[in-house]
Length: 432
Ligand code: UDX
Image (tube, rainbow, N blue to C red; front, side):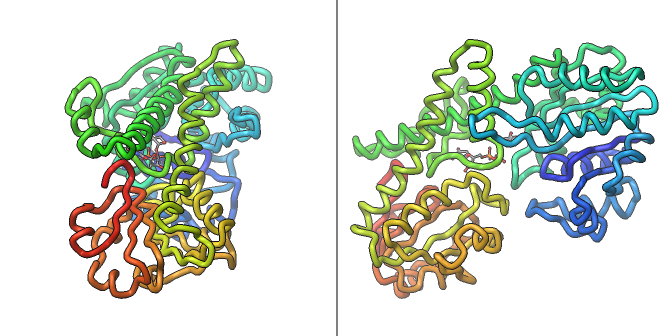
């Protein structure tokens, strides 16, 4: 099938190259001509494992092309995916202006029946709004589908090919048939499909993200309680996770969730409810709890270190999680900012995000070329992100080069007893 994907961010790029790999002819469109040039030259603007290979393979087979010209792409495609950003506005509502302008552009360039598929996370009711906008512009037949995306950064390619489920929201039988053709390979592989109306599909995405954020905040608060009562959160999480009704995933405590989705989508869901006169008090508490968790990490570091003024902190990792170069809403940013304000000296290392970090902290932080350089002379080592490379440190060497042997492990990646045996003071989250 001929498919257009509008937006070459995380979701758009993975969707476009993934759909091309399943046999479709995909045109990926972005307004950013510079980004399109990069992509045509096989340069991927984001760090995402496996994506470069996937893009290269499908460019070579000519099933994937990149362009900044929407008109031609829409003209030759029956299906148009919208995968543009829906960032938070200052009041927490999702800004759907990029979706609306993409839809207007599609509308003026439509030359026959099209299925407009929304992959962007949009407030409930946006699908109907899309229908109105196109209806105002054009007298041609079309259908609107909500097909929310559940990709995780860092494992987006794997998630594309092995989704837990595919959600399709539409009331049109004709659109259902088109979507079955788009996802033919996944139907054959017996991937679970859920066919719903537009509003339900839109709400499923927000509900999933809010629930996962709640799970994280819940275990973060239990971790804090573990510290107060002398329990081990790792064992508590294991103990509850063995109950199938709870499940063992998303029970890793840490410095608070970040990224491009959970913070934005929890805030947007609260606003969606508020608009309808409903209150999602649990989700409101999750958002507050996550903010508190970041502040609590600063207090934890100060307790271990004493007055941070003049102290050197070797900080490992700045991305919101491992295997991505994304710094959006990374908890490391407010934590480092606060420590700098308290007078600490920060020596930072991250395997992939140093350039992005420099754009945030400029000269107020020392940027180090490896872990050991960051730790040299440090009064404490702070793990902000659970990169695999930090697991394999040579702790005898670390001990020798640090000024004080304190390890503050905000991701619980180390075994406390091993580090204690090496002579370190270990501070984790919810464990000793
Ligand atoms: C999330 C959803 O998982 C995905 O389905 C959706 O499409 C986009 O949002 P992503 O933001 O890429 O994906 O990352 P995810 O792996 O879900 O982690 C989000 C945040 O939660 C990270 O900051 C991570 O460190 C944190 N987290 C996750 C925890 O603190 N503990 C956990 O147990 C899991």
